[in-house]
Image (tube, rainbow, N blue to C red):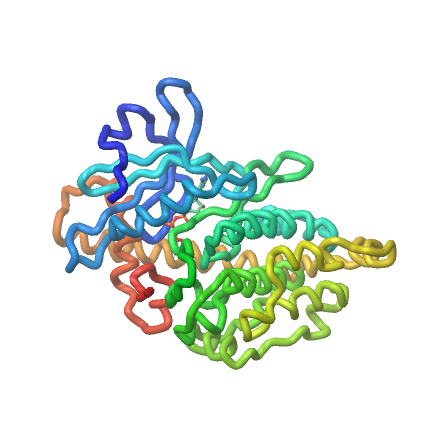
Amino acid sequence: MALFKLENVEDLYEIGEVLGSGHFGQVREVRERATGTLWAGKFLKLRKNASSRLGIERKSVEKEVEILQTLQHGNIMAIRDVFESRAEVVLIVELIRGGELFDFVAEKENLTEREAIEFLEQILHGVQYMHSKRIAHFDLKPENIMLSEKAVPHPNIKVIDFGLAHHFEQGEEYKSISGTPQYIAPEVINYEPLSEATDMWSIGVITYILLSGMSPFQGDTDGETLKNIVDMTYEFDDYHFKQTSDMAKDFIQKLLRKEQNERMTADECLLHPWIKPLTRKQAATRNRSSINMKNFKRFNAKRKWKMSYNMVSACNRFCRLQLLCKPSIKVDEELRQCESDQEDTETKPETLLRRRLSSSS
Ligand code: ATP
C-alpha cells in the first residue's frame, strides 16, 4: 500500500479558489506556505467502506498517483505531493492556468489546419511518451486537454486526469468499461481487451470534432452513440467538412478503425504527412484548409452547457438531500461533495460508462 503524507495539507498549503470538479471531488488552487508557489490540489473523497458507493476507492487513487509519478513530460500534468486524511486524499499537482484547449480554440475567429496541428502534435507527443512507458490514458477527451498558459504565442498542451489510466504489465490482458460515450472505442463497449490503441481511437474522435465541430458517432441518446460506435457509423459529410483537407480526413480514417492493430500508433501519427508534411504542396494544403469555426463554436457551447447542467443538477440533488438530513452542513462542504452524489444517483446503463465504478480486470 502506497504511503501518502499524513500531515494536514492545510498546514503546508493555503487552500484557494475552486478550479474545477470531477466525479470524486474538487480541484482547487493552493499556495505553498513556505515558498508562496501556486499549485493545484485535487481533493478526492475516499470511499468509507467496501459497501459504500460514495467516494473513490483508495487503491484507485494509488493507481492514479503511481502512474502520474511515472510520467515526467512537458505535455503531461506533473504531480508534486500526496496527502491523506481519514476521509480524503489530496494530490498536489502542477497548476494549469490556460483552461481547456477547446475553449481557447472556440474564442478564435479562425484557425488553419496547421495551427490546429500545433496542438495535436503536442497531444501526440504526450501520448507517445506515456505509451512508450506502456501507460494508456483511457479517458482522452476535450475536458482533459488543457493549456498551461493561454496568453503566450505558442500555448503548451497538458494532458490531465489519469483516473482511468492503466500501466500494462508484460503480457497482461486488461478490460474496462469506463470512459465517456462519445470518445470510447468499440473494444471498450464490447468489453474486449484494451491497449494503447484505445487512446488512438479517442484522438481520432477529438481530431474529427476539432476540424468540423461535429462529433462522429453522436446519437440522440448515449445508447444510440454506443451503437453508432460499434457499427462504425460515421462519415465526412460535405457540408461540415468542406474546408477540410483530404490529408486530415486520411489521418482520422487511419485512427477510426475497428481493429486496434490497424490504427496508427502515436509514433506513426507523428510521421503522417498531415502532421509532418514531406512536400511543399502538403505543407501548403495545411495552411489553406481551416477548421469549421462556426460549427466548432456551436459544438463547444453545447458541450459547456451540458457540463454545467450536469454539475448544477447534481449539486441540487445533493443540497436537497443534505437539507433533509443535516440542515446545519456548511455550504463549502456541500460543494466539495456534490460530484460524489452525482456518481451515486445515475443508474442508467449508458451512464455507467461515465463512471469509475465500472468493472475492469
Ligand atoms: P473526472 O470525474 O472528470 O474524471 P476528476 O475527479 O478525475 O474528473 P480532473 O478531471 O482531474 O478530476 O479535474 C477536474 C477539473 O479540474 C478539470 O476538468 C479541470 O477543469 C480542473 N483541473 C484539473 N487539474 C487541474 C490543474 N492541474 N490545474 C488547473 N485546473 C485543473
